[in-house]
Length: 364
Ligand SMILES: [Fe+2]
View 1 (cartoon, rainbow, N blue to C red):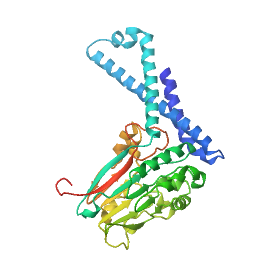
View 2 (view 1 turned 90 degrees about the vertical axis):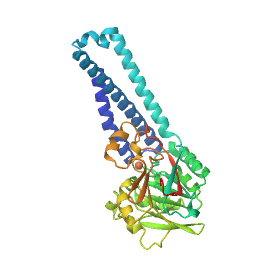
View 3 (view 1 turned 45 degrees about the vertical axis):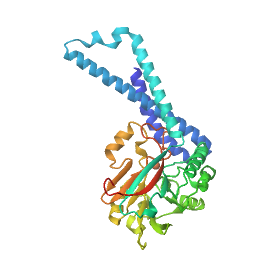
View 4 (view 1 turned 45 degrees about the horizontal axis):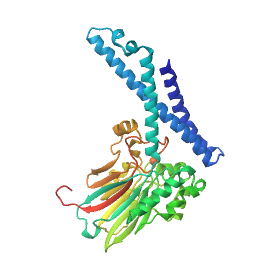
């Protein structure tokens, strides 16, 4: 009976949580109230789904036990936990599962809302001029700022990025989940990010859900160079790096802004390193044809929380981490923030620090 209530509760929460937090932005509510309502629903959803999973695991174990006992020629009734201690044990097991689901939700919440640690990635590039060795790019992606409660978090993220003294800072899309005009204060600290040579932004799919033109303008006001199938040249110790960027792979096409890595570098002079910023890893195939050395992406959130990281991992070729596709390397960040439920489990958030280094030709 309890199982049925919990299962139906979980299904109802999944339906509600997919409707309310999305629709809530259409109502004339303050962003504070929107935040409280949708975060509460999402946290409850997280709790219900972990409880559901734990109950499922319990049932699987039960079925296995029955099968084992049957195989031994014994009847399940004789050895079942219900008979050893009666109702007491069953209740105790259920209580442990409820506490377990609560614990997982709380742990996942703390992982999602914390300021992410640095993730250091050494990208070895063939024929990299020695002058460019050690150039550092800080990558933020998938911040998904939507509510006032994220203002301090973003300020701390900005301070952390500045403490690394990066040469370049890039944001590879999904910066927010509201119209720019509704969260000007919340997003304001992005203007304080400091980079030696430049700050670059490309759109993600979520910018297109919340007035992408408004976001492009806002990011320019915040001192970012927005690369829409365009490039910029960074000079360092008389060597050059092309930083090109494309708009989101999937949504831009619906707004006549095709995501085109080749066009992004059109007319560019030759350079020592060519880097592409693209929200979705899918751009890698065209990026490699266009001759980029490295593509930086996000979008996947690394699955964000168990068990989605495993499920999405089966469908996504490039879920997270450093990959090589033909002559192009691809780095996929698990993202700086979270989307939907404020929960991360076995897919930690990150502030990525990418360091260019020379391939020694043996292991590079
Ligand atoms: Fe995202």
